[in-house]
Length: 143
Image: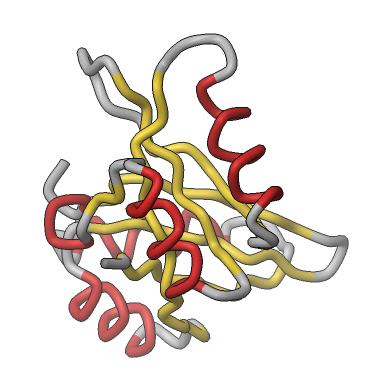
């Protein structure tokens, strides 16, 4: 019960991010969510897209270094403390969050957070066991 994200390694120079979005746009791949982390020399662009296989293929063909990573999409109550409730639960259950970012949905009562855990299966089992809503990849890609 996980999803996949596409990670693209980029040189930190003018135009590289626009090149990624151009390649995806020309290939008809829709970006659903993204996160960009950078250093002075390189960046990692993390993407949730509507077609992982196509995105991976066209980005590699364009010369980008691409990797797929398992992540978990979790519905979070859209209220003060909603995110804390999940993070507190994870911490109390010894589950480490490597990174996370938001997935924006319009006109919904819940937000969606994308998590990368050091132990994905343990996290999914704990979250679903506690009643948190984990979103299947197939559903996430079409939101």
